[in-house]
Length: 210
Ligand SMILES: [Zn+2]
Ligand SMILES: [Zn+2]
Image 1: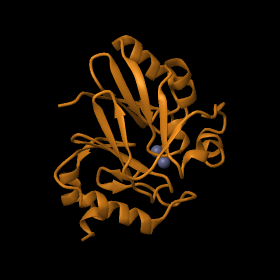
Image 2 (image 1 turned 180 degrees about the horizontal axis):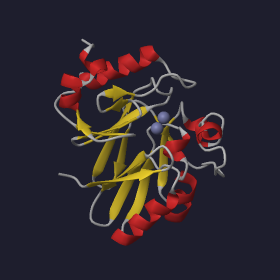
Image 3 (image 1 turned 90 degrees about the vertical axis):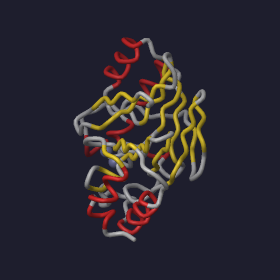
Image 4 (image 1 turned 135 degrees about the vertical axis):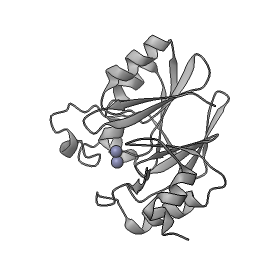
């Protein structure tokens, strides 16, 4: 089973996942507002970070991207609909989450869309566009891992009351995730990991869907 390291970062305890690509390389999914913890971990393990995949553009998931990108040279990916959040502290909610923070905008990045495959060495990440929490929220599928961002949480779902949020789109995204074939390890943007089968059976939102 592929090794994944979770780091909880920032004032909202946002999960940053470091996915080992091989013994020496890793990809990150989301980087909350604490660059030091990520850089220290990479250094301790002798890992080179090659990709930063963002599940959406909220500050608690992207706050340290500019610094980590500068120190590692990793390529940054985000859905096109959330890309403007990489430069705007109003759009990315930094003004609300950590108004005291000195946010550094991200200016170099690639945009992704539904169905794109990001190749990181031998490892492929497939983009599922799952709006609802934000317009450009995505999940990434990597082998048996579903990186769910703030869409699917253990026994819960992401908020839809921020700008760009939509209950209807969230339900549609849940329907898609429920209909995926087989089981996945679910790595959400907050709280503990779970599995898709467990959520199909126990998550009240998912249970209510056909
Ligand atoms: Zn969010
Ligand atoms: Zn979040």
